[in-house]
Amino acid sequence: MTESYDLRISGGDVFLEGHGRAPVDLLIRDGRIAAIVDRAEPAAADEIVDVTGKLVLPGAIDPHVHLGKDIRVPRDPDDAERETASAVAGGVTTMLVYLMSSDSYVGELESARRAMDTNSHTDYGFHFVLGTPEHLREFGEYMDLGVSSFKFFMNFRGDEGKYLGMPGNDDSFMYDLLSMSAQHGAMINPHPENIELVRMFRDHDRDDDLSPLAAWNAARPAFVEAEAAQRVAYLASVTGASVYCVHTSSREAVEAIARHQRTYPNLFIETCTQYLTLDTSSAAGVYAKVNPPVRPREDVEFLWQTFLAGGIDVVGSDHNARHRVNKEKDVFSASAGFPGTGGVLPLTLAEGLRRGADLETIVNAVSTRAAKLFGMYPRKGAIMVGSDADLVVVDLDTPSVITAETQHSGAEFTPWEGTELPLSVVHTIVRGRFALRDGALTGARAGDYVPRAHSGAAALAEQQERGAHASLHV
Ligand SMILES: [Zn+2]
Image (cartoon, rainbow, N blue to C red; front, top):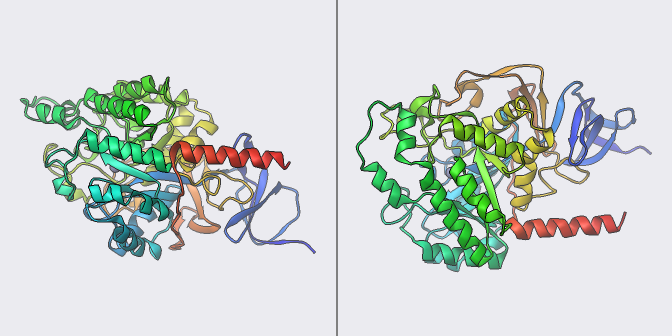
């Protein structure tokens, strides 16, 4: 009796971790990769999809997403639906969403899951933004809910986070948070900016000759980011915490973290697509206002050098769907942030290949490494027997253009408007179901919650141990 499968992905070049592109077929059953076989292998499947000449990669993982009208929590169906549609259009199959509240996250998680559960095109997990003593007391409870990574805004001092409902904090709160995180096998994702220095520059005379993005960069210079990054990196080494520096934008910040990485390994670097593809002279102007700011061209080049050398762990988006009307103001009054989740894979892949990065480095940065660091590997982030059938099929020979329409975000704009790519995303498959098929959304909202036991060094150690056990039984 021959076994039968739900789906066969046939004829493609499949990216297998440690092997690169392989001419194999994937057999999928019950949402998982059931077998990886020779193209000639006869195996029946309910449906066979021919992807000859195309590249099959593990679905992208965007670990840096903000949802909801006020970017704090997803509450309405379209908070989840539109933005996850944007994600699958760009090959993302799992996203990690930041929830931000000064209330207990036990209730917040429940309501966020209600907004996501029947509406999300992607699988999803959460990070919580911690800021109150109650949050610290409930840390263990949050871990039990499957959340093992936590954001901390180093810039929320005094009233700085009030507009988002978050209280002020200081380095002693951060120290407690790092210690607790180390004890529980979690990871802290700090937003590193020294707000005292930002305030000083904010009050300086402004140079009216600068373009909007150059003016924003001048108001929050790179050393402000680097100073905070080196402070949290050092305190991580003191407490034994794993620290994941989000949206690293500048040469100064990368170097500040890298200095500590030489003596303390549990420091990880995320950058975002905008810091790899936009600079202070970009045509997007105020639409590309974000914190930290997009930087001068030299920083973009330095980030790529670091990327090519394997020094960037993860590329995420910092997706934020604030509507375009909030951007159409002068740069100092406009909202910060923009939608970007749909661009992470296509932009990083196109620009990475153009610059000579190998596929392994690119796939690692847009999928595998995030799965490992955030405790989802090997269920996510790899094409392996037993892994979820989360796949993206890319056509490297058919160009595409990024526009607000192709991004599907409720924000109704993209800072990459008109950007031409040499490739296109053809299919996005979430646990064996097409979310994007032949470049069109299918409407399937099969997304599910992904609980994560540990993150950072604790997650990596568990994966290594599991790998060691697996090879003992070969
Ligand atoms: Zn963010």
